[in-house]
Image (cartoon, rainbow, N blue to C red; front, side, top):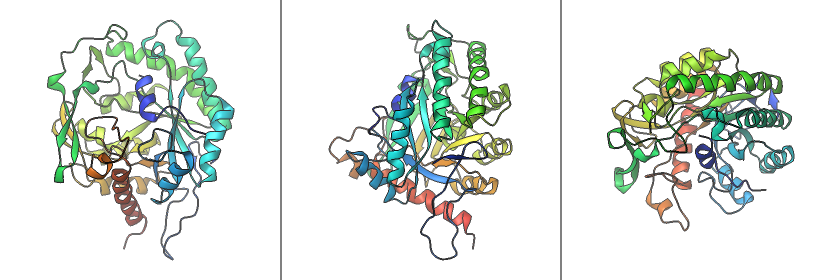
Length: 375
């Protein structure tokens, strides 16, 4: 079965059985040299995206996509089921298809109408559908449901930047788009409005998630520009992340820790990872690197092996914490091999495809194995 929405599409629309504790993921045995430790119940798990539009998977059929992910040594995947409500039969079939090929789906992005974010007519009905979807996720053994909270995602600031050897990076320059007006369909929202609305949402859904043994992971605002077409961003600062997890004190109320966004905001991802890891509020990880000219406003997304982040130090911190959920080495760079493939359509300027994902995975897997098997 093929899902029709990628995680990126849900990003735009939204604005393995679970083991105790909530949100942990079962780990199949890895074929490693004798004596080497691999992914297990108390280790990070490298993942890629599985779905009909997932550039990380490639291929034209579910079987092809699963094979391509498995050939990289990846046993876990993120996915997308579209806007709530989710159907139990469809979700179970989606997860079972991946499992047949050796992939465990550990996180699926959920979308919901803008009325939830902006507190407009229909909000309560939409939240009920989210709650129903979380129950479905729990029944199907999905440990993590990811979501976004944007009044507007200011991707207008993205542009392509020449990179090493003719590859492309993704640049962001806030100065070019800081004065863009609010869109009529969205309106402009203050920080207080956004906090009030998400508190209303969390108080409704987190008790349901706890009962369903499901963790929620809110992705940070990316780009983390201070104002996005007239609206302020609650997840555009580390202080915002901290405030978010304190609204409802629960491990089901967590974040997607993105070390790229962390650096875009001028922070050390190891320190931020340590803070949220100590609270057990990291429910998903995005693993990427950036070069920052001015925090929040001007940066370039680069290859995972360059940039300002010490990616090995981040991985070591996750291993030290015994973080048990998934690590997604996302945002691959545009390289010639991917650009030459028929039908290649990057979802953002300077973005790459399957071959570039293979580079990210190899780099991340090597670091994980080095952390798990110190000399």
